[in-house]
Amino acid sequence: MSFEIKRLSEENSAAVAEIEKLCFSHPWSEATVASEIKSGFADFFGAFCGEELAGYIGGRTIAGETEIFNVAVSPEFRRKGIAKALIGKFVETVREKETQVIFLEVRASNLPAIALYEKNGFVFCGIRKDYYSDPKENALLMRLAFDGTQEFEEWDDEED
View 1: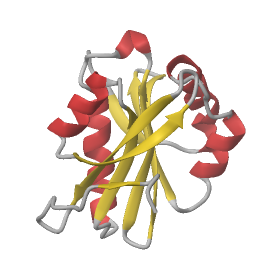
View 2 (view 1 turned 45 degrees about the vertical axis):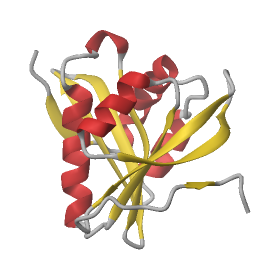
View 3 (view 1 turned 180 degrees about the horizontal axis):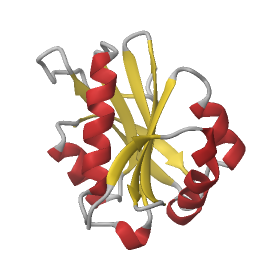
View 4 (view 1 turned 180 degrees about the vertical axis):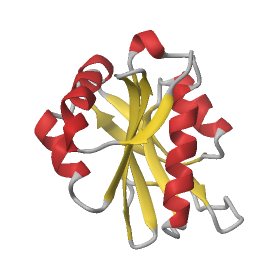
């Protein structure tokens, strides 16, 4: 299967929202997606199989740090290298913005996603207790640093 990675625009908001509904228990609305895309701080890329949006990645860079909001691939297009390609394009783009680190959260039970992130250089750096609902679950916080190190002090956001 061939696919092409393209930058997304507000015109793609409905298709992104449809993928959100297929992949997440609390999907973003079309309006929320459109707002983030036009914010000026966010980068969204989609993988297209012909004219169909098969998956997307979105995140925001502010002050040298990037947060990946979501990586999602429609169920019928999974296990075809789309998520890996999206992550690669996203990382390449934010590095050009001179970001120093990328963060993301992932459900602790989402072992395929965790493995994908680890293969792309992300490392575990914390836990956000009960971050997700439906079902209630911890989030693992992962990071990818570009300063040549992946050293960190483990922390838990529930501690003060």
